[in-house]
Length: 314
Ligand code: PBG
Image (cartoon, rainbow, N blue to C red):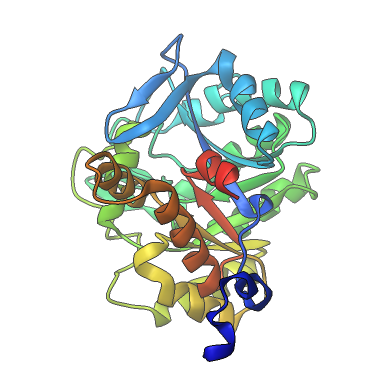
């Protein structure tokens, strides 16, 4: 269009914008370290010791980031993920510290078993099979324990059927009606998660996650998963990964009117970092374009490891 050839007019016609308030920054809290440790498969991303988490949040808040999602790397792992609901566990301690220093930070926690189990799966395992229903009471305990430590939003990520309803009931019964739920509703069994499993030390020791995560050949299934989660009481829904799943984001956004988060996952981050380091891509330009494309597809919120860089770019 000839009228739009003047560069200075472009902002006036822009449909999509990313705001720093749209971003959610992941934080890996590790109980086993005393100084921050770079994650090999995620250059310039770190595991943070419990004592430094508040500092990390503070620095991000100075850049305008308001929301954080916490993942824990515990000292103790067992078959039943008991350290995940220890009131003195790694995430619980981190939450208490951050709450003390930054009461206006929005604290979100990943609610799952995989970082806390010896086998690395997201559910209770018996005879090599992941047991859906036996996992629900554990997820309830984790959510309540995070709520006691001051979480604002719990984010169940294990794709167990009925997890949202179970957690909602448990929170309400315990007096935590005001804790919201962001459900990893449409989470695909994706190859893009492998750097995360390094980061969170949650590699599984047998099998795969295909019995509970979605098949990436399907997209209608995402709508069914979202619908179930909404019926069970989810406040925010999520599509994960983001970049190779923009069509799913769009489809979900066109069907439902609730806030939609997209998870720009570890593998997407690693690709950008690797190519930038080799000088093949301009990192800042690529980050911006990726975030815009996720928003353009329909996401309201973006969980991204680029949060701090993005905050500086925006
Ligand atoms: C835990 C969980 C995973 C991610 C977020 N929560 C890993 C998995 O399902 O294997 C992946 C995040 C990423 O790759 O950035 N269930």
